[in-house]
Image (cartoon, rainbow, N blue to C red; front, side, top):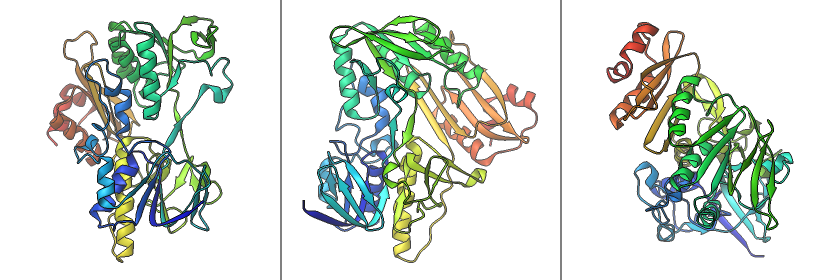
Length: 434
């Protein structure tokens, strides 16, 4: 097949690719210099919409409404935008081989793509129960959510099994957001997860108790401390029940699984340095190979604030790392320097009428404040994490934009606190005065 050559190639067509493309345009990329190669069939879009508004029964989000960069309040980049800028969008194209020494990518169809500079933005893929050999895990109507195609299949099933029973396997981000959206679709929802409380990597038991209580009020059943070990199906191969390790059998018309993700790095194994499960980069997202950069979920990078290296799976980091890498590429070409990436970890979620934000590091002692009663008409509460007498992490449910900015500032500045008791009493006002 014909070979195509570009000055710059982005492999991957997710959030990071879209934000990188916008930054390339800002930096003055010339028509024909940049290509984005994506196995998805659509231009880059804001992935978080898939577990939220895309699945709503009324006024759902649909493309082109949530193409990047609307998720951060920026311009929406429609497919025509790429054409106007002379950026080649090569869609429905899976790269199966990457030879970094010859600067060549090869697609499943046998096409070769040459580059001078490569940005790896391959993101993550979901962990599947079939990876662990779970019996019946390939039954119909067991869904995972990563790409728009996954969401479209789930929507079809929601309509086909109207008002049915849904079992959500997993108690993390996807589990909580999907449990909410299935309940909004009038499904009888049960969540199953092995941990003692939901979102254990981020939530304290006290924070989790609020969300579990709120979900219970909405009629969602939560089964903790066990895992799905098998699935029964009918003669059509459709799932009918979930079997748990503790001996339960849960009726299910639809199962949605959210048990984590893993970075897509296998194409580059043995060719670039890795660390902590990701591709190792510097503070400009340059890998161990000088003309190869990596951004988003796949990257293990220096976390300047904590004098540590980490890998972060979140849309905020995908956007910001992509912009940083492109700025670095152009600065290096011009013989200039830019500031090192100085990332403040940020996570957020929205479900039902709830909306929380978290900034910083959830280490040390947690100090809860505010009204965390799930029965409150308008609950509003938060937490500080204190280490060595300083605030290192902040969390707020139900905050206004200004209040969320205040907790972000507190996590960034890490102020010393008067005392834990005083902080618990003063609560949010402490961050707002900084």
